[in-house]
Length: 191
Length: 206
Image (tube, rainbow over all chains, first blue to last red; front, side, top):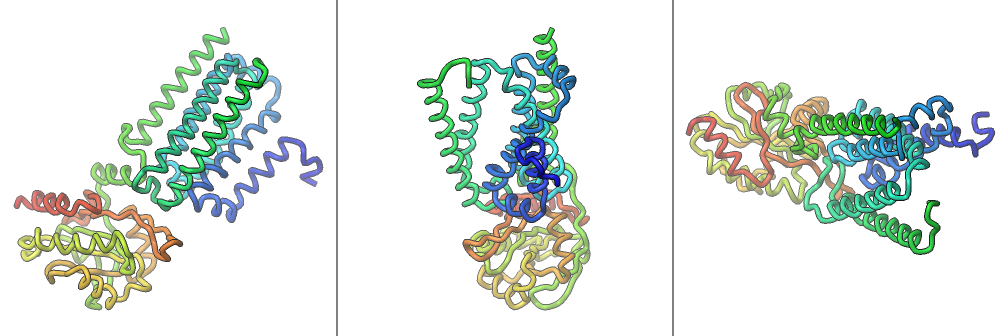
């Protein structure tokens, strides 16, 4: 009944969200640093991206009136993302129910949704800055996790942290390759 | 107008974000749980619950019985191949450094096992012997009730996770200083026993 038309973005978002909330899956994803940072948080961001469809036109126009070139939205998403990159925030979201709730609410609503609202308004330069900063973050954090001698999170093992670092370097590399291909063969003004 | 409003919204976001980061990271000093807990206890000492313990000798005490002494506490499990081996020999070294106040009964070294099922009094005794226990002022103990262990871990801020690669555990290892009032007042790195020892001497005025 609920999934009559599974292609509807809102329904996909709601379903994904419910699945991510289910305790067994939540436990599996949060039992490794890699699972939390490369699957759980990105999927929650994805839920927020899809939520744009649910906003009424009036809300969209109010947001747009203070989101010139998508800059305010991008800033909000960046600040909240930076928070969920703090090792103590990752730790607390596993052990403290209140912080876990904050993660489940803020990641879709304050990262995913603002990004979805801002991306279409972002010009070539803003998009370029965003993508390069995203890529750089993957390299910076990936390198940090790979070489850091101790554990950054009390809830995660050192080899997990190093594996995450390795994956993040690969993702950074893939992003860089994608941007390079776009710059060489892509059409400007469309991303 | 949209530009001005965006500018204003961005400024508010940056200020609010910066302030929130400052609060959460303790003025940009603590980015990990471990640093945060060390800063926190220094500022707001934590009362340690009077948990019931069984010692390596088999006898039982309550943590409250140790009030009146400065305690240096570490958390271990005796099968541990890494940190706890190091911590064990560090506690033995602390027995040398602190021999005078230990003999006076002003200081007590205490190793608490977070693996009470395996760490029987006999195992605790063997652990101390392996670490070259000097036989003065050091006790190893296991919590009698599982709930007691949970309360201790919460009060001290100890996180223990299973490590499938070694079949044992990984935990945040450190040396904890508890004052005579039973309050956790300072936490030292697991490889800084001398600093911990000197701090105790300083607090005793010795």
